[in-house]
Length: 338
Image (cartoon, rainbow, N blue to C red; front, side, top):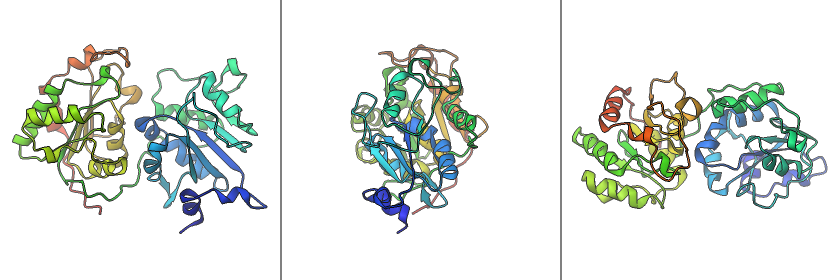
């Protein structure tokens, strides 16, 4: 086991040595999709600061995912310090050499890092906190936003460097269509009856269909499966961990989902996908437009991403639109990855 792997799996003993390595702390206390948009920045930091102990403040639920972000076979961070959000107590990571705000631009995220008393803080400018830095690019895609922040400090970033490692899993069905009907907010949730029509059509086309989701999304997934005539065993929602979900998507023939975290998983593992957008534009949070294996559907409507009902623009996307987009996807070769 390498020294970095040992630091990942256990206590950070590197900081207790007489000649301890300088520490770099990154704040990214957001969800699955947001974490994946930060992959190019995290990998750039690993290249730029190879001698630092790199610590990521992030939700503990994402630790298994973060382990899949590597550089030359080594994790891009040495340690994940669980951090539930900006209202949580400040973690005990005092005195880092460098702190980097990949979370946001507001006073609260800046205060979290300033409380650690870093020697140097890399962040977008925040006059309310007296933090200098570049201006926040309003409508920029998250990937390019964080790339621009690091580039401002002379750290080169490749925005296309989005790939993550693919873990083994026993849940995968190579070549299957993965249907993911859930999303974090109602505004981003296409009606279950429409997902069921898509799933049924995929099955009539001779494809195995798997329905994914979190434990809280299992009722929706089960409703979709029942209406589509799928066996209960093909509903993976609530049964797989995050790493298994990555493995399932990586080996799938194609994924169809809303604007939610699993769409970013498809980008990270190169799986063909059709992603339905409602309140937010694909240019702000969608897959890279230059990749033909990903198709974004959007009616051109901007709305409230936290609304309590499906976005009107999302509802303008029809089952026929989705089926046509699926037919246009490049064929995914079966990936036997363990």
